[in-house]
Length: 365
Image (cartoon, rainbow, N blue to C red):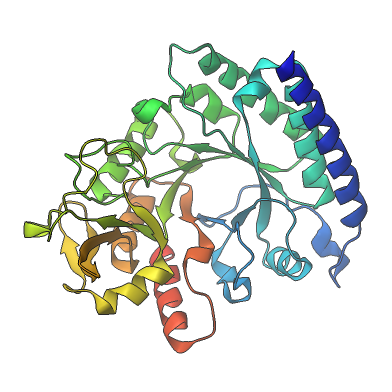
């Protein structure tokens, strides 16, 4: 009874919220009124550059000409919207499926209709569906999720003709970390699978030792396993991190091995997630300078904070460029950035240089 009451309250609150945003966002604010028309998901010749814009910072300096799709969490600034559409960039809404949506028909229908209304209200070009809950093949929710996402894709295409529909999937289809979906039938109804080729070791500790969250060999294996399932490689977008992890070491990392302080539990998160713009600020003050790990094809460095040693593992232009070679080799649909605001897009000379290098790594000549 309590759950039903909470669900009804949620429906009422969301309905009132929807009524407000429809009133606020109903008029096109672009000088060129045609820019407010949704961009069709018709096939493009170029590789997708799929990016996440979840915080309103420094967006004016994005390399707009290199982006094809931007995931947003809701309304964006009018100028941002108009610039994106002037570059023929699709803006797609990030929408979360929760477990209770699958178990309650009323909640499911409300999620579907609300998502469509948001896309229409904000004049967006598609939907990016995310499901974060743990799932295994033995769970009833395993089949319920398959049913719901297939239904959702059909519903969205009917209500929003020409929209792009994408789905977030883990780095591997092999049911690691209790994130197991019925990938092949789901792939048939989506335009793109955004593959999280990062945070790979969040729940896969190697003896509580700091390591990369996006090692090249694991990225390659995960993508290859999707293709082996029969999934069209052109639907796969390889996600790369524009961030790293800062680990606290028990002692100076001899031989490069940073043994973590919390060796009794090692529960996630093992390190602090830090954006690339913070990493490039800490690197010049490090004890080691930039080091390279050949096994994982990523950089790292060691620094001290007071009397405490820290090791930072991250991706930079070199490691991303190595991953980018997989696009042509496996005929992938594109590459994705998590996320745009992790790089400094301000107008300083140093920031401009670092941003240019990261963008060029995504889109090599």
